[in-house]
Length: 165
Image (cartoon, rainbow, N blue to C red):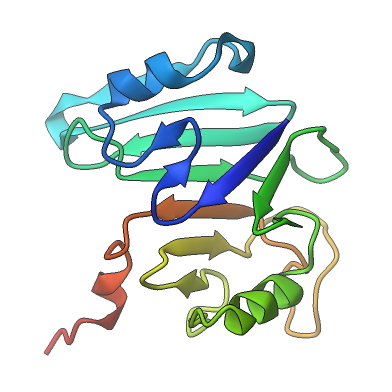
C-alpha cells in the first residue's frame, strides 16, 4: 500500500478540514479498527491506525476537524510493505539529507534550525529526526532517516517564525 503525502491537503483518504468522524468513515476497512481518543477537556481528538508497522494518526487539535496527519516509521529492525511517499521518494527509506535536498530543488524552504524537528513551512511538512533506538546516524549524530512526518495546513508552523518579544 502507498500513502502519498499531499501537502497541505493531507494524506488520502484523510484530508485536512474533514471532521474526525468523516475521516474515520473515509478510511478503508483494510486499515483495521482505529484507536480513537477524544479529550473533551482539551477540545482535541485523534484516531490512529497501524498499517503493517507504519503508524498513521489523524489529529483534530482544538476542535473536531482534522488539522494534521502524522505518519511514523515502522521502528528499528522492522520492514513494511506500506510506503509513505513524497513526490515519489519513500520518506522512511530515503536519507533525510536527500529528502531535504530534493525539497529545496522543488523551491521549498527547509528549516533545519531545530535539527531534530525540521519543517518545510508553507507547504506544511514537519519531520522528526529523533529516536532512542540504535539506528544509523549521520555525522551530526541525527538519525540518517526521518522517524515521522506530519502533513498540516499551510500556516501550521507559523508559530516558529513569530516574534515573541
